[in-house]
Length: 81
Image 1 (tube, rainbow, N blue to C red):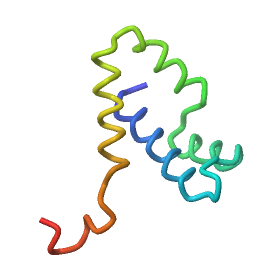
Image 2 (cartoon, rainbow, N blue to C red; image 1 turned 45 degrees about the vertical axis):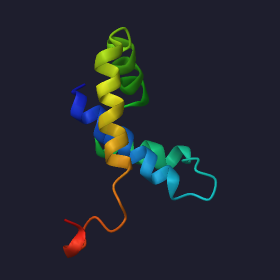
Image 3 (cartoon, rainbow, N blue to C red; image 1 turned 90 degrees about the horizontal axis):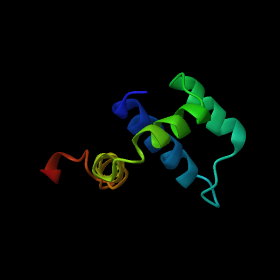
């Protein structure tokens, strides 16, 4: 799995979970998102296992994810520059 795919999928899963009352994503919703990206939960685990021994790489991956999750609500406003 490409790094960008892992980041995209993780962000999509997290954003969807945050829209639920308890921040837990139902299994059906999770499976739907994974299907949209044509990946499985095992693919995500395999990515983490493959790169988990490289903390610098994983730190950058998590920074990518964090930066995508911390987009200000009004970031699309014309005066947000």
